[in-house]
Image (cartoon, rainbow, N blue to C red; front, top):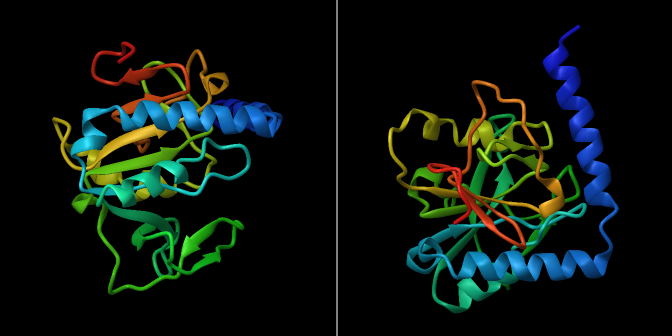
Length: 205
């Protein structure tokens, strides 16, 4: 039996339950607080090309922040499931008026247009959903590996460059330790409603 896989599966199950049980009012307040923290970051203020995601199943929702970024004149993007390469994402321009469609996970995404896709290397900031995290900024996703495959190139760089990766989570999603695999991509920072964690020094920002 693969003990690592079993432990990770159990952890995902527990964290899904925690996130699922968050009341809508608390989810709304948590999203507001986390978005406000990100908005105050120098990296957000300086970024010209920002990718977010549509919050679902209890996730912190950064879409209000994306609306604000659009009003500030920033170029905004949302992930879409790659139509050819399985398990990967492409980033498509988003505005409040753009048509959206449901993907196979019932998550809204912009209508795919290969002519408008932007490679993640060309983005300044990517906001990432997650299921769990620890103070070393290890991120546990839903298990599909979409962000890990798409952002695999970031594991080989020696210093933080584009894109800057921010994982967003509820405080209740913090774990003592997240099992780490060689292919996992760590965000540059984790932001919760109450605090932020920077990866390079493992201290609250």
